[in-house]
Amino acid sequence: MKTLPSTWLIALSALLLSLNLAAAEIIGKVIAVADGDTITVLAPGNRPTKVRLAGIDAPERNQPFGQKSRQHLADLVFGKEVRVSVVDKDRYGRIVGIVYVPLKIPNGEVIVDVDLAQIESGHAWAYRDYLKGLPAGKAGRYVAAEKDAKETKQGLWTDKNPEPPWQWRKDQRSKRQSGAN
Image 1 (cartoon, rainbow, N blue to C red):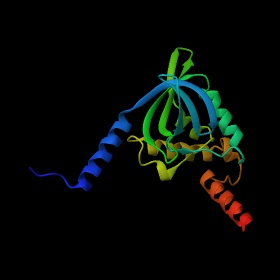
Image 2: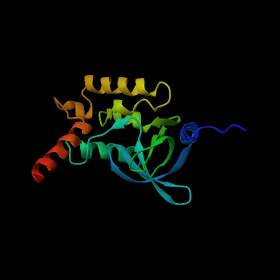
Image 3: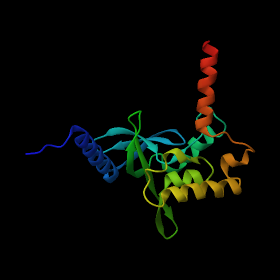
């Protein structure tokens, strides 16, 4: 009997794991909002689960618009039951997912893609480095929403030259390193 080479087994395991993550969902109540792209969901079994919103990057807390971004996200989800469509797990062990929340409207309710809502309102960027893992069509919608928010000067786009969080974090690391020398 032939056996598969170990590299094939590793690749197959990675594929199965990614399929399992992609099919996973978490339903629970949002018990904390850390910033404009990270929440904590009380998952089944009363397990607090950190969730990083997929495909977006919001200003950091100490960055301009950071508090407004966090507050907008909190207004959308804090204390509410959400559904998280799991996309991946990040290097910090957080679930990365698309968060959906039902919002009441006069004739019923609508399910809102919270990640997209953060971009549309000008409270986050479409995080282009991490769009490739999203379901079909999502990446294009996120990029288009950012363009619309920018053109209509929503949220952080009221600033003439808002600094993307990935650049802000890089600048902060450089400052700390140069201060340490």
